[in-house]
Image (tube, rainbow, N blue to C red; front, side, top):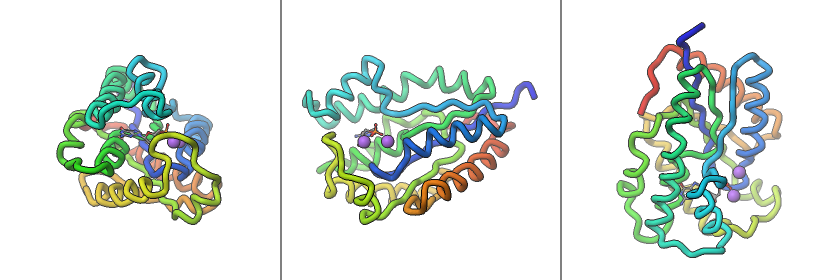
Amino acid sequence: MAGLRGALIVLEGADRAGKSTQARRLVEALKERGYRTEGLRFPERTTEIGQLIGSYLEKKSNLEDHTIHLLFSANRWEQVPMIKEKLRSGITLVVDRYAFSGVAFTSSKENFDLHWCKQPDVGLPKPDLVLFLKVSPEVAATRGGFGNEIYETNSFQEKVAKRYAQLMDDKTVNWKLVDASQDIENVHQQLKELSEKAIDDAKDQPIGK
Ligand code: DGP
Ligand code: NA
Ligand code: NA
C-alpha cells in the first residue's frame, strides 16, 4: 500500500452545528475501520499566531478586521508543511474548519469583498471532501446558548450562514451538505460513509490546491 496518500476532509458550518463533536467521533470511527486518521482544528490556538487569534476571539484584544483575517489565514499556512507530510505518509486528516470559515466569517463583516477575502488562502491544500453541517437556527437554539466569543451572536451567524450558501455554489469544491438537525448518531453515520468514499477516491490522486 506504499505511496497511497490520506484524504483531507474538512467539516464546516455555523457555530453550534456540532462540528467539533462530529469531528472527534469521525476520527475515532475511521481509526476503528483501519484508516490511519488524525484530527486538526482551525483556528489552532496553541501557536504564537493562534494565541493572537484566541485573544481576539475572547475579546481580550482588538485587532483590525483585515489584520485578523490575514492572521487566521497565516494560522492555516503555518500548518501546511505538516498537513502535506501527513497526507503523503497515508494519514487521513479530519479538519474542524478551514479556509471556508475564513471567507464566510470575514465577508460577513461590513465592506469586505468576497474576492479579497479568498486571496490569502489561495494555494492551500485542497480538501478532498467538505462536509457542511447545516442546522436550522431553531435547532441550534435548543443546543444551548452561545458562548461569549466575538462572533457568537444570532445576527452575525445568520450572515455567516448566507455566505456559506454562496460558497457552496462553487462546484470545483467537493461539498456535501449534511442535515445536522438529525440526531448525533445519524449525522455521524452519514459523515462516516461520505468520508470512506472520499478516502477511497483520493488515495491515488495528487493533492490538489
Ligand atoms: P471555533 O474554535 O471552531 O469555535 O472557532 C472560533 C471562531 O472563529 C468561530 O466563531 C469561527 C471563527 N473563525 C474560524 N476560522 C475563521 C477565519 O478564518 N476567519 C474568521 N474571521 N473567523 C474564523
Ligand atoms: Na465557537
Ligand atoms: Na466547534
